[in-house]
Image (cartoon, rainbow, N blue to C red; front, side, top):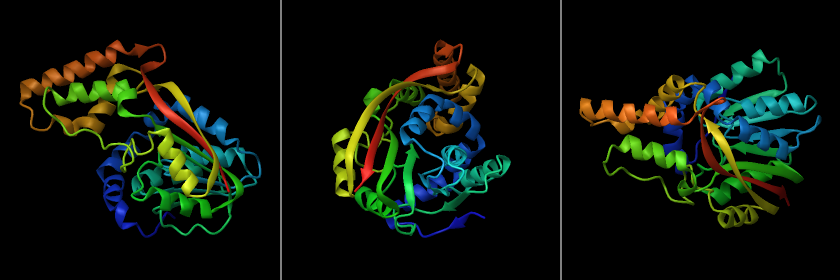
Length: 284
């Protein structure tokens, strides 16, 4: 059973979003979102280097793809996925059962304050789940307390908004010429909180990690196997941006999105370039 634990006051807004409609949307489209990050997932798991006896902590595990893959790679280890989202964790638990993984547990909790136990894990990893902490250094201190000395930390985080053209394009299209609130700046809880290598270095070094290295990745991100599926996914995720538009403007905006997706159709699906950091570090 998924257990719910205390949430830090600084993370309450994130909890409301991920345990609410936003989390439900990602849970309903979990397979599609996992497919969108297939290239990133491969690089993350390769950097984690999970071996048969490793105990693995998955931070912001979402629907559990990374947790379940780690459990498959390390059948003699124990594996914990932690996330704020009840809907996503329900998918994760179902996936673990389907794959026959008895060495996996999932907890609905805030990794910033959850009591993991001391020096339990050999590896901590996160696929786009470590950027939302209200108090970043404190969060990684807490995560670090769960890691054995010399344990590996591997994080996938977005590079900046300016480096991710797909985000700029979608925002430009969906805003329909209006002034829309921009994304939160670097260092603030949100997609770009860990978008600057020097800041990542400062946070992790302050939290007790050594050998921090940020590898710049430019890999495709896929939004669907065809234009229709990609359009459906993005209208579900970004549909709030169409609120307040008259019917004609809304139709033109959706048509513009459709056409842009069609321009990015490839033999592997609707693909855009993306920019991320793959960060590795070692627990002191």
